[in-house]
Length: 289
Image (cartoon, rainbow, N blue to C red; front, side, top):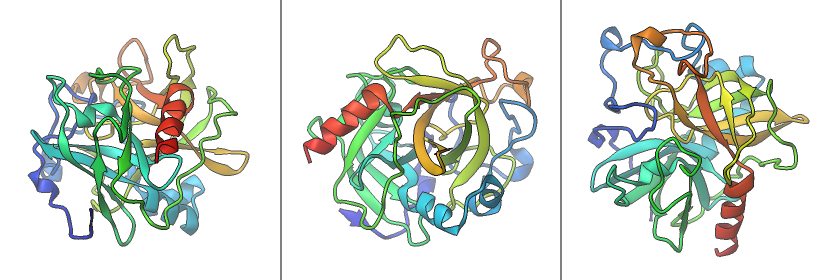
């Protein structure tokens, strides 16, 4: 059932993330007490979509489009979790990180929802049973190649159009990204919770995957609740959905504060591609609608 009442995110004790060994509160402490650790390449490059978006080439229509299709994903039981998600393929399915939906024990969570960040936000229940969801594995390992979830909304998000995938044009090293996150933890800048957070960053390497999913390495900043964040890029002039943020280095380690990009040293973020197994799973689920 769709809900238009404001959601009280203070109920959440921990954001779901493969991005931290111990996840921080969803409601961050005061700016003075934030642990200002940016995993990659100097200062924290993330900011509000409306402040940073124009410098990334986003116009008013792009900004409205992003706000309509992306936002928070979370579950309430048996323990709370929260991450980022975006519509995928149509207006009744989202793509995000699977670990949002699972307890550390492997038990599936329930009472799950998606809430976009439009000017007039909408919250819709998620259907997480096997008939209405596709997970990368029965018990997905956080941060792994199977840490993805495509989940059906209880009803379509009316008027919202997901970004195209462009699977016929593979992600390449050097590709310029715009990463969209609902509200990552411990950012340097203060951003209203109703506004998406964005950053311009770059695909640094596209390894050959030995798994069913594809993945790529980036220099995008990621902290708690960044999991599932939409990676956009302009492909032949069109914004396309290229992947989702899935894991990063130990983002609360002071030794990595502003550290240069270094995969072996942990100063790296990994995204799963929207092609290959993820695209096949999404098409399968959408075909069952």
